[in-house]
Length: 212
Ligand code: AMP
Image (cartoon, rainbow, N blue to C red; front, side):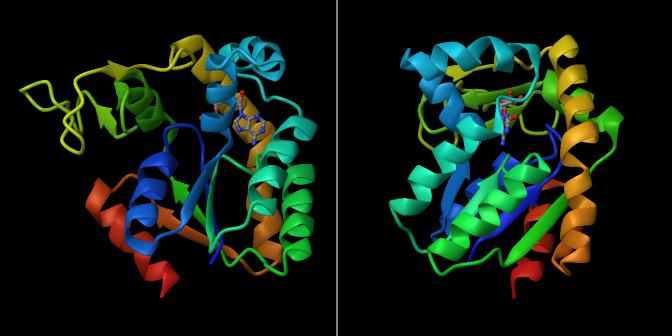
């Protein structure tokens, strides 16, 4: 089963992707995480994309399609695409890459949220440096003992691009380049919507309901 989670930054794609990994044994493919790893490991590509990401702009289709191609060619029993595709050429490329592997996109689930909520969510967002569990200062604070509820880790980090200026740019990129994918998958008869403003457990249940 291959699932695309669609939605603006802060919609909850990463959080829901992790549930799908735990419950359905799927592999999360987050191009954002792959690019951040490349940046931290100091590779040539990582250095090139770091500034683009910090500004909140999109990196080139060629780079992200290349990253996804490598993962798909390595095989797996099903993927959750989180933050990919983000442009129409990426969506076409994904269809082709999956076809080459004898697979297809099975579900495209849009997590729908309003812009005000996004700003609030992103401003308070942090993740466990060890396992990547996502926290939010208001809706899901780091436990009072300072330990990650999932792995017990004590180090938490905030993303360099989770600031207001970069967020505005990321939202604009979403509306200009990514939101046309809603129409694209609608016409293909694959677009499904879930209310991303509900609490985390309700969103999880609604996503699961779409998969049965
Ligand atoms: P994310 O973690 O999904 O919010 O992605 C963080 C940043 O990585 C984005 O603001 C882009 O700069 C870059 N990025 C991630 N995925 C893509 C993609 N599919 N296409 C282009 N740029 C991407």
